[in-house]
Each structure stands twice: as C-alpha cells, then as structure tokens.
Image 1 (cartoon, helix red, strand yellow):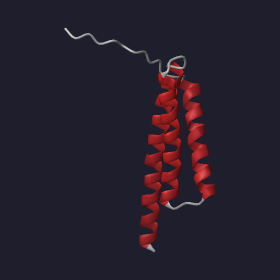
Image 2 (cartoon, helix red, strand yellow; image 1 turned 90 degrees about the vertical axis):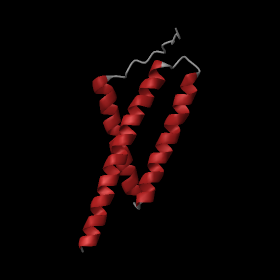
Image 3 (tube, helix red, strand yellow; image 1 turned 60 degrees about the horizontal axis):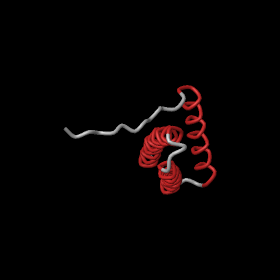
Image 4 (tube, helix red, strand yellow; image 1 turned 180 degrees about the vertical axis):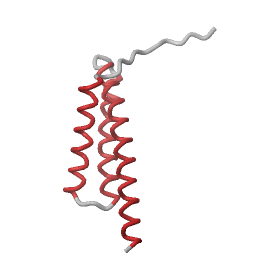
Length: 101
C-alpha cells in the first residue's frame, strides 16, 4: 500500500512541475507572439507554442492518465495562463542590436 501512495505522490509532483513549466513557457511564448505579431519571427514563436502544447499533452499521457484527467489538467493550466495574461498583461519584448566595439 505504501508503494502505491509513493507512486501516486511522485506522479502528483511530476504533474505539478510539468504544469508549472508549461504555464511559464506558454506565458513567455504568448508574450513573444504579442510583441512580434507583425514580424516574420512570429511564425517561429507560434510553431514553438504548438510544439510545447503537444509535448505537454504527451507528457501527461506518458505519466499514465486517461484522456479525461489529461483534459482536466490541461484546461486548468490554460485557465491559469489566461488569468496570468489578464492580470499582468504580456511582457513587451523588443530586439536590441548589439554593437561590437
């Protein structure tokens, strides 16, 4: 019984850390997309965001959960991301040219 509880605890910790990483990286990618929405680099940020979403979904599936639980966790993470965007807005990013002296 203790092994089952320990395995469940490790799964929960793994889900928490993966979700935090997903939320942080998604927030940064969405900020980048908002900052560079009229530049060609927008395509790079958009595709990276798609890859991040699919990677997060695959990681949740690999942990050993069914589709309903994965969808619930994903929706919770998206809701937290929306709250972050509404509360703090997006980070303004601008390119800076480096000069070598």
